Length: 315
Image 1: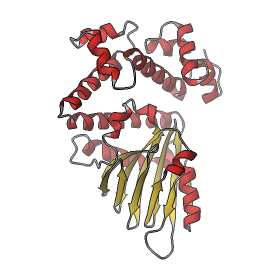
Image 2 (image 1 turned 30 degrees about the vertical axis):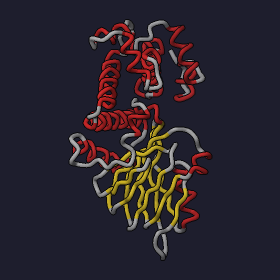
Image 3 (image 1 turned 135 degrees about the horizontal axis):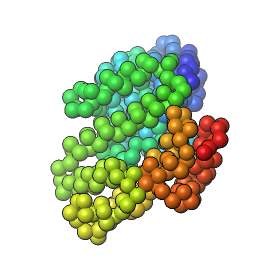
Image 4 (image 1 turned 120 degrees about the horizontal axis):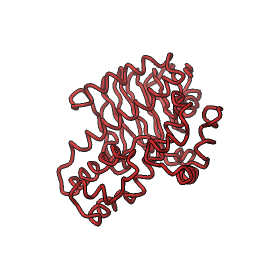
């Protein structure tokens, strides 16, 4: 899984970073020679790369976005040097220990005026389990040791970067998905701490409901009525709460159940767990309905998806 690639000129560097992440423009910001390296790989759809390079400006332009439209989030953790990240009308200085998230579907720039090292995670947006509007509040926002969870999670993520050469197989797969879960927790806490206005308070209430749903996904009786009752509101109010999120309540429940099923089916440590048991674990107890819904979402039945990932027969 782990590979180390180096480049000694900017044409080669632009090809390297574009192949390692998404299509990007890279330009020097100082004269003289250049050298850069990208080391890492991808596990469970999570790219984990360490970058060590000379000063530069990296830009995700609209033209480059058109080349790769799939939605990814990137998390950059500054290891040495400083960087200036700009997206969505915000910019933030990243100092060693800081981390920040950005969205590959919208333009961004990162400028490094000196030699630097950074650890970058890149993963499909659906893995995070947070709504796009919520995450958009935090793009190009530095989070460091002064953030109540950032001080604990940041060092963990930096250590994961140091373990890259050994991350492989079932444990690497599990660790990659758990790392994204942990990042989602950090971002949810940061979003919640920013809620002050009435609109943001509704956002906090929505996230509280979504958190409740996450904990109830294994309950086959989970329904909008149950969710509404647990939060002392009418189902009409609940549906109105979800209206701005781009999902209905039922869609959110189904999407989160299927995404958890997909992750378990792709987990090598669960290769012997029957497909039906995985569906039931996440509240999808009707095997035929589970199979149809999964095929609609991912283009293959649960058994075929698992076989494609692992190359093994499913139970």
